[in-house]
Image (cartoon, rainbow, N blue to C red; front, side, top):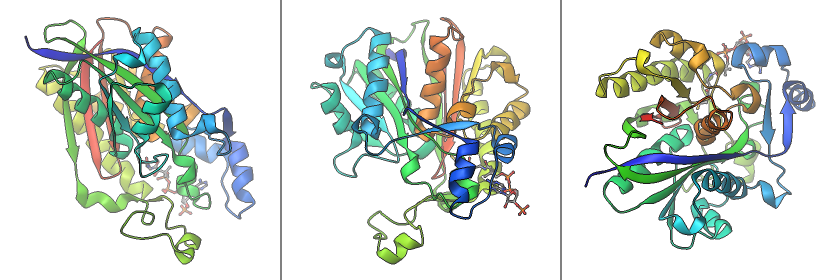
Length: 337
Ligand SMILES: CC(C)(COP(=O)(O)OP(=O)(O)OC[C@H]1O[C@@H](n2cnc3c(N)ncnc32)[C@H](O)[C@@H]1OP(=O)(O)O)[C@@H](O)C(=O)NCCC(=O)NCCS
C-alpha cells in the first residue's frame, strides 16, 4: 500500500516577556538608535514580539520547542513514545553540538526516536514537513515530530534599527502521521527551492568555523544578523508567489480552491503584496506577525496552531504553507486538512 502523511496535531509556545514597539523604541534609544511605534507598525505590521529571558531555563530554544511539542502531541492524542523521528528546524540552536533535536528528545523522553536538526532559516518548518513526509512515504517512519523554533533575540543587532524591530522568539510543532495515499486529509504536494547565490542578503558572518568571534569582530557585531531589507522584500514577494503558484499547478488547482493561505510571517506588507499578486483575499490569509514579529522557522506552525485551536481551519479544507528565508531558501506545501 502507498503511504501519505497527515498533520494530526500542532502546538505553540512563546516566552512570557512581551516587548512592545514603544518599549523597544525606548530601549534602543538608550544606545542612540531612533525608531517609533508608528514607523514599525506602518512598515511591518508588527505591534509587539516575545523575547526570551536568558536566565530562565524554561525559555531556551529546546524548552520552548518541548512545550510546543507537548501541546502538539496532546492535540494528536499521541505520546512521546510514539515518535519515530524528530526533525528540529532552527537557525538559533541551543548549542552547535549536540543538536537541539537531541536536547528536545531528552526533555520530551522520546526514547525511540532518532533526532536531527535542519537549518533552512525561515523556511525550516516547511523543509522539515517535506523531509518528514518523505520518511513516512518510504515506510521508514510512522510518526514524525517536526518542530520550528527560534531564539533570534540572541542574534539580533540591537543597534541596527532596520532589522532589530522585526524579530521575535517562539516555537511551533506538528505531529505528522502515516495515512494511506487516498486518505481525505493528507499532504497533497510540495515545492522546495534554494538559491545560494543570494547568501549575502541575510547573514550572520562570524561564529561558524569560517570566522571565529574575536574581541574585535564582537565589537563590530559580526556575530549578529546583517540584512539587506529592501532587496529581501522584493525577492520574498517574487519567490512566495512562485512557490504558491507551482504547488497549486501541480494539483491542477487555482487560488479559488484554497480555504487558507499560511505565508511566512516576515512583514505584513510582504504578505499583502503576495496576496495581491495571487489575487487572493486577505481575510483568508492567516496572520500573527502583529503579535509575535518574525519568529523565523516558528511562524508557520504557530499561526497554523492558532487557527486550528480557534476553529478557523476545519476538516476537509485546503491549506497552503508558503515560506522563504535566508539562503535563499523557499518552499510551499499544499494539504487537505
Ligand atoms: C526592513 C524593512 C521593514 C524596511 O522597510 P522599508 O519600507 O523597505 O524601509 P527603507 O529601508 O526603504 O527605509 C526607509 C527610511 O526609514 C528609515 N528607517 C529604517 N528603519 C527604521 C526604523 N526602525 N525606524 C525609523 N526609521 C527607520 C531608513 O533609514 C530610511 O530612511 P531614509 O529614507 O532617510 O534613508 C523592509 O524592507 C522589510 O521588511 N524587508 C524584509 C526583511 C525581512 O523580511 N527579513 C527577514 C527575512 S526572512
